[in-house]
Amino acid sequence: MKQWLRLLRPGDWLVAALGLGAVLAVSPVPGGQHSNAVLIRAGGAVFRQASLDSDQRISVPGPLGTTVVHIANRKVRIESDPSPRQYCVLQGWLERPGQAAVCLPNRTSIELTGSDHALDSVSY
Image (cartoon, rainbow, N blue to C red):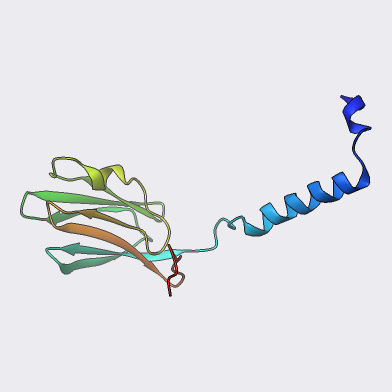
C-alpha cells in the first residue's frame, strides 16, 4: 500500500482535498428543518390540523372507509387506508416540512407544515 502513496504528488493531494471540500459544501445538513404540525385533508377540505408534539392516531373518514393517520416522535404517516394499492401507506414516515402523502381513491391527504419549506425544484 505504501508503494502507491509515494506516487502521489502535492498537486494530487490538493485535487483530492478540493474534491472532498466540494462534496461537503453541497451536502445537506441534517436537522435543519423542523415541522410543527400536520394538515389533514378529507374530500378536498381541511379535516384537522394536529400538533406533532403528542403521539396519537387520528381516524379520517373517506368515501371508501376510514384512513388512520399515526403521529409519533414528531413524525407522521398514514398507517392504514382502504385504497386498493396502498401507495399512501407505502410513503412511510414524513418528517420534513412540505412532505405529503395522498390517498386519491379515499380522497384523503396529509401534509407537514413548518417554517422552513424545502424546495423540490425552482423554475423560471
